[in-house]
Length: 404
Ligand code: 7TS
Image (cartoon, rainbow, N blue to C red):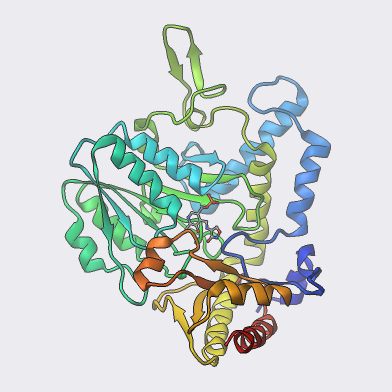
């Protein structure tokens, strides 16, 4: 088992007080906290090797370029991509999805179909709607059931030769459902469709193997997995990345520019216009090293314990309902208390030092399905403890009494 106290000591923010109380950070779905090694790596970059990459002959530029490309290699290994040029640095999940959706504008014809799951974050809905508006393609939704599971029989029925791309998250941010993506990837491919997996909520909990999954695209953000904000990854199969047009034009993404014609650089540079988040890209590698040091098996064990314990303890509260009761679930508990607005509970427990997210979690269609304005979401990380859950349960009880 993990020595949680030792791990907690790696995260300086966790020993802070907020509103005069020890911080209990249960908003890991929104962003994770950062260990000292990550914080140090950011300042070390600016103290020692800050320079622009891929352009200078001078030593610092080469050091920065090497560090950036070493990090790309680490990420390639981590997700088991076949080639490092299939690993593109982006600013985050949202950017990666927009890049792919924008590229499909060159491929889709009116009447083609895009399948989106009912469990998506807005960033995996809106870019596809924009794509459909632009191309005349039709957006279809893979429905879910009361437990917050996608209905595979309905998915199978929706798939046809018209389906050109399927998009789903690996894990739902609002409910914690782990989707059967391997099955979905195989089914999409059986009709000749591409498939994008939004791994934003998966990479903090597991290590995806993109070759084993055989997905066409896998996107995620660094900041939910102990890394900095403003950096993320788009993995794409080489063939697809060669087929898609560039997303942004600018420096570094070209082979040759004249006023008559521009030719584009090879992968990955074709999709990396402009000066990137260099420190972010390098330090994402540090964050991944840190998580691998903790070990994803250990992470999963600890988080499953927290999920089971938190579920049991919260259900002791009268009138409390949990949304998202899938068999396959990660350490996210979305709940409401009968007759009380989630925002009111969130505000009161914040005064007690407890950070949860309240609201629709950028997943309004899920809230509409359950006919609720939002939920209170406690999302646990491996550095959280059962004792913290006990404090939250007592705080929610207290808030409930005050508001009833
Ligand atoms: N996809 C999923 C499944 C997400 O959970 C999020 C962010 C995104 C995409 C967008 O990621 P970004 O890094 O590009 O912003 N989810 C959340 C959340 O649940 N609470 O705050 C942000």
